[in-house]
Amino acid sequence: MHPVLIQIGPLVLRWYGVMIATACLTGLWLARKEAERKGIGREKIDDFFLYLMIGAIIGARIYYVAFGDLAQFWNHPLSVFAIWQGGLAIHGGILGGLLVAVWYTRRHKISFGKFADTFAPSLILGQAIGRIGCFFNGDAHGYPTSLPWGLVYAPESPAGQMFPGQALHPTQLYEMILNLIIFGILWKARKKMKTRGNLFILYVILYSAARIFVEYFRADKLTYFGNVSAAQSIGFIGIVLGLILMWALRKKSYEPAKSRRL
Image 1 (cartoon, rainbow, N blue to C red):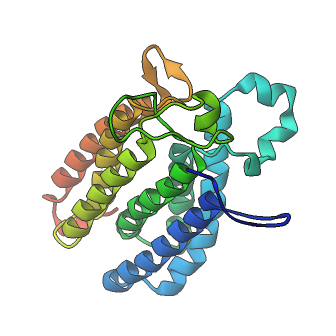
Image 2: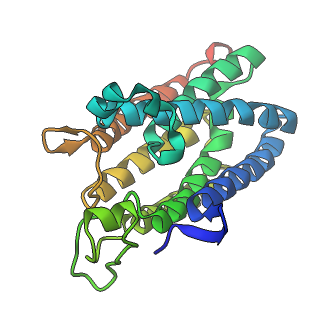
């Protein structure tokens, strides 16, 4: 797998950038469709999307710096801003986007649960597309394997530099497949879940479980807590909090209509 899609002289177009752009545009298109169905104006989605991108990038970078090689960033503080050199983590992006969503819905007096449910299918579909970019880029890669679907990555890629000439687990594709399955579940469940916020919570639970599984095969993990990676730790927290919130919302749904508010 080679990270460069097209190179014309000094102009380089990378697979990663193309797939991230595709993921964002696809997610925006799908969110608009869901917003129309839920009675949320498309202009609200378009307006929010810019804030979302800013919050997600900042969150993804902060997470990577916090759980990455702190000594390197301490010695070269300006490298914190060099996102073109890599170093964005999806969990940080989700958390950053979530904080922006809380701020935006409060500012515009929109139900946060309804808004989060609108973006849940878009989010997981965008993540699936984004992993294709990681696949060609050679990051988020796995350990060496003798399985017949093991892949040898380009020597200049992160995977090729860590394990030159060795076949590795294509963990990007593992996660992409799982994300597409989750998207299918959410898409089918989106009209059946009546309690606001439950669809997004289901996304958190399912993606957390998928990521915990995939992490067992990934070689480029961030900080460990004992034998558990940072992503797995957050995954466990996500599952527990998701189940608690889903139970709390279900209990609240039995209260009189006047007392319900989310």
